[in-house]
Length: 208
Image 1 (cartoon, rainbow, N blue to C red):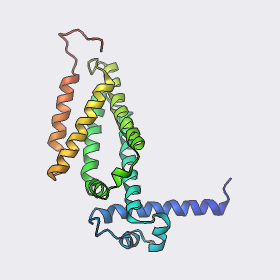
Image 2 (image 1 turned 90 degrees about the vertical axis):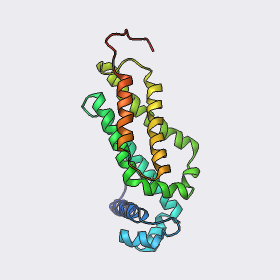
Image 3 (image 1 turned 180 degrees about the vertical axis):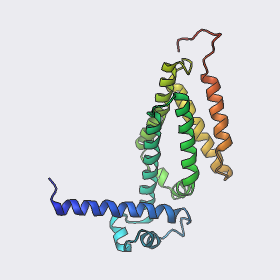
Image 4 (image 1 turned 45 degrees about the vertical axis):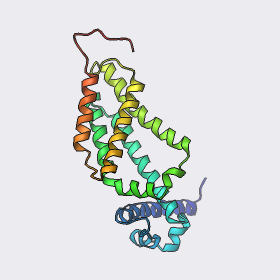
């Protein structure tokens, strides 16, 4: 069992990490990779630069931490939405809104992490696990929709994978164009999938 002093140290470390994370988001959002300075992040977090280096040996390591924290946040929010006590169709809409809103808010951070080469250093297995979890979140909603009778019977795994690929495609296209306005593209995607998933009262259900 941890001693009182050890628990105090853990609480202090967690508080420092949260302050560093919040500060890093603010500083990174307004800096280039070359202009990003550890002392600026330390100052924004209210800690000494030496303290910051105790947690992260360089800005690339800090960027990796921030990038991973953001991905964990959006995945947790997606899971929360997937299990919300509302109809599947509404959850699908809420999930899209949350993903695109999150991407628009933090796109500068994600872009900087990508330009720094951090994304390329993430293990393939780690990337695949994140993708699998994301697809599973969509699949959970689709399965509920089928069970509710709100969606027609489909291969929920394949449909979720295609849906997620389409979301990633929109994110990449907007990044390429540089507008980061996902509103219309998100509405179009949701409309297409709602049409695809809509039960046809005049056609018998197929066994997918």
